Length: 489
Image 1 (spheres, rainbow, N blue to C red):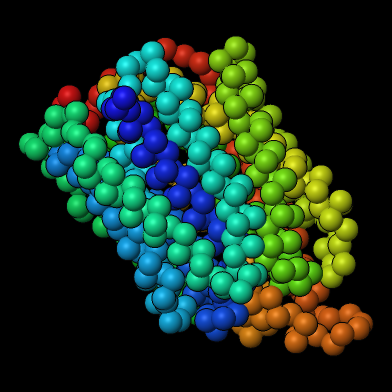
Image 2 (image 1 turned 90 degrees about the vertical axis):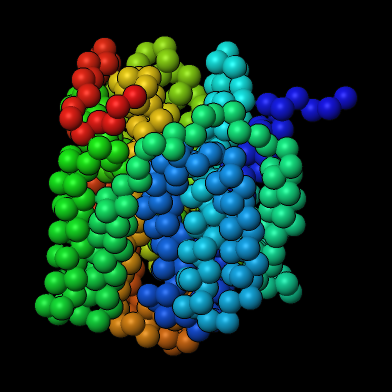
């Protein structure tokens, strides 16, 4: 008996969600091993992670628009093929710079998958079954994030080496690409009369990239006027993007949606929440492997409670928000996250910290994130008119990824400003034992640990500030009236 088409779509997109999210954590936990083996600079090491997220943040809405114009199935298939090819290229990268470039290819494929998966599911499933289908797809992503931590550690620490973390994508990606090509069919009507906002995409992605490059070079080399100038150019490009979006017929972001108070406050709190929690895992990975000298597998296991708490509280908070509203839960989630981050900020990080003492703030941080996300997304989507929910979802995902990028950049800048580049490279590569004598205090590592305190305290205050717009988000009727910049429906 042939499988119903809707289940073909569900299985294929679930594979895509699992692979794309798994790849973020599997690379994160293997990053010190990769840095050491490729002799990557700290700048290259961080961009191995950031490049993937940057492509997703900057191209997600553009690819969504392209899929509306040319067809979702075609671009979804292209995404799987690009992701698979990018994974194969990553596995043979000869140096850190090449790996950064290959990760951009892989991230482009991931962005095409993410931007079309939900739309394909919505097209294939009737309205009474869509919620369950989308929920299963999201669960696959969260499961991938947990498995990635353990699997990345196992593979990076095995005789196969870190390159094997990319090998596993090739057979699954090849199968899914071929299966999607032959089995998926276009159910939507392409809108070939619509135009692509190329200028907006260049200004947004370019401005974000230029700003982050200036930020990290300034932290590594020194805050010379040239690097401050680069950051200023990046900010000016993003400002130009905002001005452009208010004037074009088919904008990348529909800024008129921010006239809805619940939408605006929900998006603001989501951006701040992403900045607050985005760099937590990265900082802990470098602490576990660079200071405590744990192997990749153990470091991955140590991080799993953070993800498990997030995954456990997420569905529960989503269910409760349907009953009691989103404001209290999302506000409480950010306050709990603030407590966890301040706890980390005051934690006596050392070269022999007790894991049980670290476990409590990690679980709190994960639980706070889980409490916040689902109610926040629900409040944003409920405040958005049905006809604009597609672009609102894309804007929300873009701001989440942008917040993660800013968080990573901020964490890196604070760490890089505290210790010399050569020391930072040793910490990133997990070779801190060569920096300090076997016994006694190490002033350089103490400065690095001090930078961790600074990172967590800054993020704690950002999370606290995020609770303000979260509390201001009230349930209300959608009172949206399209402005002149909104495309005609």
